[in-house]
Length: 505
Ligand code: NAP
Ligand code: MG
Image 1: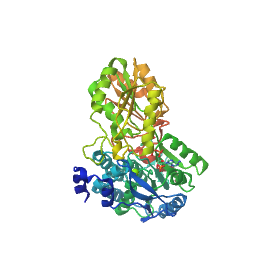
Image 2: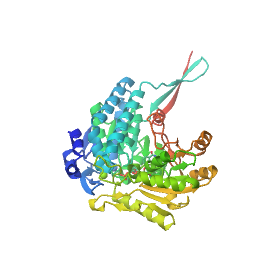
Image 3: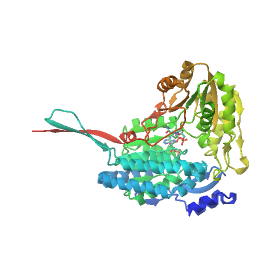
């Protein structure tokens, strides 16, 4: 059904969000203990398509009571051992099937993602869904390939160091890559034997709900993966404060990440992994391929409408090549025009909702007021569609103490800051509360190594930007959070280590 639907999207008349939503037979309830259920209060909230502003669904609005119910099912499933003590080989089969089901339903999920949060269908299809399926597959495969340890004690004892699942894990995720951020948590949390409760962002619940159903179809027993759509202040907070939730794996803003630290401290000291915001610098030295750097800089900040945690939102460029580089970036950006995200040729979609649109426009105003030079863009566009579109925006003459250089905008806004030597560039790069990612463009191998080690960030790209692989860990330094997603390292945070000391007699 959906592959023909996607082919049809080449025709403009096929791109009506309401018609597509009704054709898709949307799941809008919570997924609890293996079944779709309404919120206990019966409340719902409206799901908006950001490309038209239309309401495409009413979704169950879960609250504290729903969290209590889901946690008790999750706990029961965990204690029963139905998943947590299942033979690793058998658990592997289930996650591999889950990965296959994500891949088999990728077109439908991609369409849901685009309808719900406004990213180009081209990206949802080519990037988000393949990476999500690959992530689940990777952790499925890992299950029976990761070993525990024996400590090097004298022969009179055997000390086994075993990793055990934590129990009930809550995954609280954002709206910018809804399926992918969910699978980054679900993959390693399920692989290690936990029961997981997924709370998607209120702006993007649709794919998460469908994931719950696909997980059950793959063979996850009831209560092992549950999905609670709802608001952060209610469902999110209830998970953060619940005495029987053992861990929260969170991706979102630094502000909300700090709330989870408080919830944990005020409840049961639950474990936390926090993947938070960023204000990533891209350093461009004169001794590099400027055309390639310009392409990386433009896509680094404008991809996904700029709604990317590691967006290259601060361009740090040597004064000698600044004008030339900016001209090239404007050239690349001219090909990244906002358009209908359902059009398969669109490269930049809609901002997720009206609140975020207003936020981005307010930052653009702040940039102008604080004396930065608006070099390109700066406006809302396509207003007649009812959707929330902002054109690629480039500021020049930014100083690192301006608001647009310090705060995460989460929109298509680039701040250009010039420097005159390497030391100054590194100092500006590190002058931020964040430390998620950075990029360095130089052909000097010595400088590349020096800069890569000197920048305080969880990932440093050299002569590229925003490259990733499931085998490469991702996460922040400083107030970009702690804990790593992706790679085998991601599994560590979902387990506790136990030493079993056996005395030989
Ligand atoms: P957000 O507002 O922090 O929300 C993230 C999640 O937390 C959502 O599910 C949200 O629910 C929930 N939440 C909000 N307020 C809460 C509260 N008081 N208590 C408990 N939970 C609460 O972030 P966002 O606007 O969705 O996403 C953008 C942010 O995510 C950016 O800062 C970005 O940098 C960050 N991000 C980081 C990474 C990374 O890997 N480091 C990746 C992607 C995004 P509701 O939406 O329903 O309120
Ligand atoms: Mg939505």
